[in-house]
Image (cartoon, rainbow, N blue to C red; front, side, top):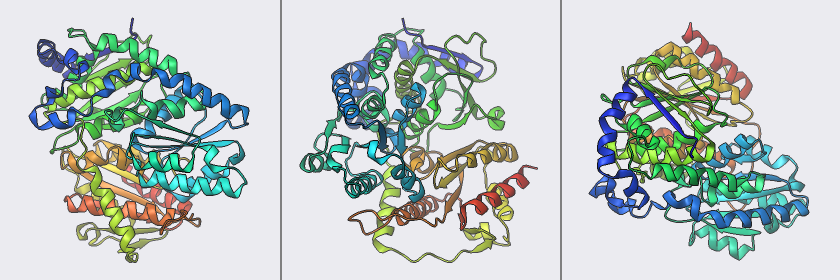
Length: 536
């Protein structure tokens, strides 16, 4: 019997009462597991018909278990016991949650920051293998990591091909090039599963299993949950969760995720992409706000629904406008995927496309091709260069001035998105500005690491409701790394990604304040000082 539990109260309970009977009557759950592409309307049918393989992923992925185990044992016999995952979005978020929850080591390289790439290269290279994971087979961040690791292996006298494992879709450019190069192993995943729904496919399982996770147990949990979630029943937990996510009236379109002892490390980071990228389009959507186990000053706002992730033995009933969810990791991966499909139905959108993700990629490509010279800063405040639209700069002399003007543009139902384009592992404490800004504004504040968030909430920021304001933080580095056989370096790449995304947001009429830290340590300290001043 599945350990899943979904409890609702307040507006969430009202949404369940309003929508679940109709979902049951329409046979939504059984039709979903039968891969019926008509569930989201005629406009979504063509895309949905190609993207529903995830409902049987736990069963289809079973043969991978023995293959992964055998490869892990081969590596162990060769003294290789450290694994790096080069992937973005759906290719990295699920393995990160799976391995962190299991307590096994996996270096998730989902950044183009030269200092973070350098850190991945510097640690125990002689014992390292890299999993290069890309559904399309052409993700620039992933391919750049592959190139720099291949060079590092060769320079260390290690046969690079023997240390590179590839996960991609069949027929992708990466599949053919990897086989030609003779890489250690090429795993092809089910092409009918989109990236953010791929946790239980090769994209989630290969890096996790190589790192040491019992992926068969994970599939067992998911299989057990699927037996419950496929039922057209009033107590189906996915119907309850999906109704709460997409069916409150008026829509509470900010989801504040709080972890109250779930035992699943970083689960909300995975759910953030699943929900934001699936629902944030056509001016609609639901925005996850990840607060972990920290403060959530915005939790009482009228457009916020609180999601509490709790332990399976939690007994206290939820209070207020709350959804409380418990269950094992494998069962929750299935639960949230089904619930997101339900929410898409209630919101009237196609949960399987991402029409605005490509825009930032195109802008980045154009900037890398043109290599424009950096524009002078509009304002300089010590170690911080300030750039932005004129309305953010008139009369601005300090970081405090600029932040105040950005927040003055925050709509009554808006949110602030903080986007930090540098090493998320070395500077993880920077996330501490999030609750301070939420307290100062009384509004939801998200924090994303760039370019990682471009493959996650980036779709929502451009395709969702036009109610966000954006704080982009970039940082100079005394270190840069060339990308072999590439006309640009990692430093140039991450700079172009930040510039390109800011350009696209501005083209959408979104207010963007850009702060460049000319010295990382001094710049972070100055930024913290300015944010704390706002919070007083």
